[in-house]
Image 1 (cartoon, one colour):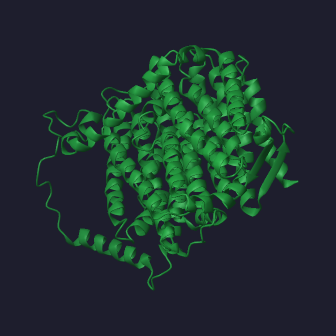
Image 2 (cartoon, helix red, strand yellow):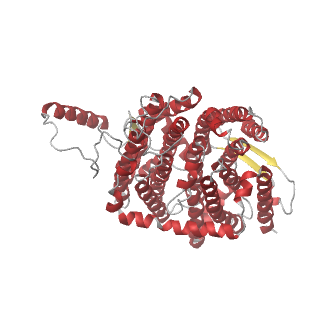
Image 3 (cartoon, one colour):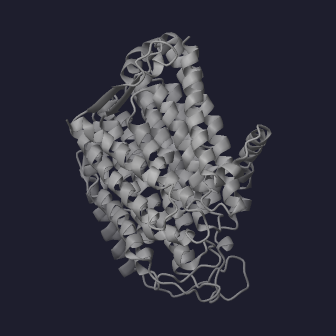
Length: 635
């Protein structure tokens, strides 16, 4: 039976988790190999999920009392979850292979069980979030995902900064999860008579919320806060720039590439499938998207830490996903199916694209750290000749994330522009998105040149990383190129994923690296060809006059033959956008209060980080508490 394949990753990753408790030196390779196998199966399940709906049901407790609400554990894969499973499988495959060599650098100074135990169970909980078909079990798997991922942030237990970042991440995401618990309890208690099955919720909830708008807006608020924290949506974002840089680079690729996309998956489930379509909800989501992409890229421009720059860029791209999602909901609610479906397709396309190029960029940053033992952009430089393959893949990732054709980032951003600019209501959002795309290019000019082309402060001894680290980078780079040149391939999957949640199949025309609505009688490729030819003719005909002004030295008197520090790239931004930076700092006050609250509750995170028994006990306690609390509500 085809559906039985859903159990294979669960079995493999469970075995890997148990093996990960051993201290033997070979355990890292064994766990990585098993995680790689599970990832390949996830990719297969994702492909299979587009052909047929996979479903398994298990009656766990056979009880009608306390645990009645959790009796049935249902696993189901439709086209939407299949799409996200493909992303998870591809990225976890690359991260697992990459980690075989990369994680060796931690083996002499850290207890590797913190990694070998938590890494496979982190993959497992993300997989379970995507295949479960019940709101109560979703909450359980969601909480466990947050629990075990925090320990991966603190793999370097000897580094106080990493431990504090993990603690901050735990406090904020746990606070956000309480809003999700509240929303789920309200839904199943007041609306569905404790039926948490996704299919039943989708039948009952839209009509109920249409008749009770106060409940609709209360649930919308709770879900936006709960999922917004995990997705690092502004103003709930400040945990991410601390947590993702401190995690091992292959884990950072998973955190930024797929984990913060799981809220996007659930937001689509709720606001498109479970809720009635309301234009005001779409506008609210789009506004949050614009705020997220604007403020985050402003901070990315100023970073001097390579992984911290990438972390702020991850927040920026969450904005690029939320903006078309909100715009799509707004258009569909107003009856505009064409641009509504294109906007939602753009959100899903950019979700996949960001997973590919951000996963790639975090791996390139990890490769540089592996060879140089630093991520300081002021210190790095001139690594292109010493690490040519890493430099090439970093260039592909940088151009893709900046939206340069013919790479995949251009396609999804183009779809965002043509959908948001189609309406007076959302046109301002589209204009801001175009501006931020230029700022993104600036940030990744800094990332690439600071590491690979500018002169270093002193000579750096480095070489190309081992094949097990370079091959995953090359695979992701090739996918960035392939999905840019042939966008119709992922678009077919996206159309099917949207259809599974009730969105009409979009009507589009696909050209090389270009997607447009099927409304015009001309080929946009003609415009590109004209611009290319006219630009080349202008360059040939206009005579060169040589240097007419001195080279800009960013306000410095030093000769540019010496290294230009990373902090000099966009120094003037702090003055030109001082109001934006002041507003962006407001969220720090909120975070400080959350962390202080966590300390008042007596959470001793440092002990948990060092004690695997405590980790297991806390996980089991979390399950028991959730089962008792949620089951008790029904008494």
